[in-house]
Every structure is written in structure tokens, then in C-alpha cells.
Image (cartoon, rainbow, N blue to C red):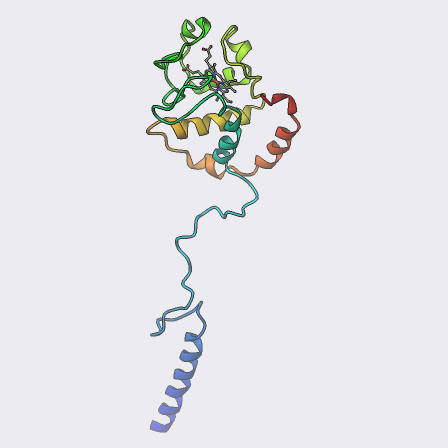
Length: 184
Ligand code: HEC
């Protein structure tokens, strides 16, 4: 009887030890797993093939960078610093000389107005001084505005859905490449 129990216990011990040597499944054994699952790994893998809309917006903003800074108190370049511009009245930046057209436009930079402006600045506001051919693709405009907001609106939180919409990114990528005339 005791023999049987001892034999059984040693069998158990062997199987537990065997289990314990497999890092992935340590069933409460005394040896901690060798490779604990990494809970700090970022959600989006760095080798993910699709960029998030926010990342795409950042890339698109490369077209604006020559003329605009984004950070609070940033320099005016050819165009005004854009901190805290979205949602506000146009032509409010101190120390920047706007065109008459812009200064007297009465525009409020809602997402919609901004999107129309960026689609074709010269059409939206004739005689304004932003020499930019425009972003023809609606989704490019959405992304650049998303990026602009995330960088320049103090309380802006990037919506979750925006970050996870990666599906249509690739097709838009190819549209983007097919539009050389939209380069500044
Ligand atoms: C070649 C330089 C240039 C480029 C490129 C450019 N801008 Fe501008 N931008 C300007 C100038 C100049 C103004 C002021 C226009 C005026 O006073 O008529 C302006 C004005 C603006 C305004 C209004 C600012 C305010 O204070 O009311 C916004 C918003 C803006 N630009 C966003 C963008 C974005 C986004 C891009 C890229 C997609 C871009 N701009 C590309 C030169 C540029």
C-alpha cells in the first residue's frame, strides 16, 4: 500500500518536474517560467504591414512641414504655426502676417472647412497666400487633420476606431502613389 503511494508520488514528481521544464506551462510549480509571456508588448507590431491613419497622417504632414510648425509657441515659417488652430477662427496667430483674404475670411477651422481648404486652398479661399496644390484624396485629408489635431489640440484623444482602421490603408497607399500631381 505505502509502496504503491510512494511509487505514485514519485511518478507525480517526475511528471511535475517534466512539466516545470517547459517554460510555457508551469502549473504552479516552484520554478518560475523561463520566458514569461511579455505583457508589455505593444499592441501594434512594429512589423505590421499597414500603417494606422494617424501614422499616415504624420507622413502626409511632410508636405506641410516646410511651411508650418505644430508645437506650442513654434516658429512661423512661410505659413503660421498651427498649434491650437483646429476648431478656432482663422488668422489668429500673433506675429504672422496673413493675406487680406485670410484675415477677413471669418472662417472657423472646423474639420469640414479645413478639409475643403486642404483639398484646394486656392479654390476654397481665392487670393489666400498658401501655395499648396491640395490633397485631393478625402481620406488623406482626414488623416492629416487627425494628425494635426493629435499634435496641436491639447485635449484631443485619438479615437480608437481611427487607430484600428487599417484595412483600406493599402489601397489608399496606391492611390497616393498614383497622384504625382498632388506633390507641392
Ligand atoms: C508653401 C507653404 C505652405 C504649405 C506647403 C502649406 N501651407 Fe498652410 N499656410 C501657408 C500660408 C502662407 C498660410 C497663410 C495663408 C494666408 O494668410 O492667406 C497658411 C495657412 C494655413 C492654415 C490656416 C492657419 C490660420 O492661422 O488660420 C492652415 C490650417 C494650414 N495652412 C494648414 C496646412 C496644412 C495641413 C498643410 C499640408 C497639407 C499646409 N498648410 C501646407 C503656407 C503653406
